[in-house]
Length: 395
Ligand code: SF4
Image (cartoon, rainbow, N blue to C red):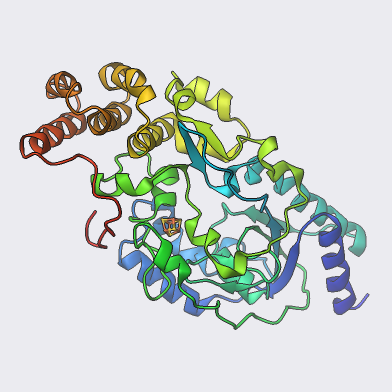
């Protein structure tokens, strides 16, 4: 079998296994992308994503990740499963990628199957390494070089048919295949993502400042969400996909045929804030969100987000729950954000709790209480006005 025939057959098998896009590139370093990545790190726009720093020396160098790598198969799976319905009262929104089951669990078995199919095709064993999102590689840059799509201003990979609603995976192989033509086009550059990002996180050079990105804060940041950003969360309980939803490349994308990524298979499109705020322990949280992407936020992150969304949406039904959390929750991040939310929702009656929180054992909670009391004596509202763009230097 020629290399061209082998490449064609592997791609056909990948499509038969349900992958919507498959491209091939070699294992050369990604020099230009590496320069951009290092600029992003130098600007401190990776926030506290430490693994982005520690993996920096290898990210653009597939052969440093695995020296035997000769070819990289880049695979895309469409996860688009529709739009939001009108938000029920007292609910928070979940980014689309997390509606169904966790792709980290769902996709790797098919990658393993694809490698097994390659072995059958070749008649001998194949050495391979595969990753779904979690690998130390610049996967969107690899996908662009493998011809799968272009990179948008919001830094997402945009495919021709499925827009940016795709999960990417890579298989590093010690087999030589025929590389695809690199995608050199840019996105339509209408800047809808930049205009609509609620925090101004997308810079004019297409780099995204994670310190301002709601997706970063609601998922990866497990600590304090800076006060100026809290109102910008709006009703986003987990993630944010505004910059994808407004992208013209994402109009008219077909629904995914992977039932695992439909909302019925996982947590769904929204969650009731009262249910989230009632989760009493990490064990209960893990049991509730097993097999979904939401487990990444941990209990403290999701309850913190729910408190902020309740405040932003004026959902005062949860005031009794917030009072309990502000007074008694063992986690200071939950106590502090519950206190902030209470002060937004019920400034007068939250005063005794704020006074009490001045003696909280944790400095973060004491600081939240002091700031709220200071604002009150200055006659200012706790929540920021409706849509002030956060400046890049703010946090
Ligand atoms: S995910 Fe949300 S906050 Fe982050 S860049 Fe996109 S629109 Fe902005």
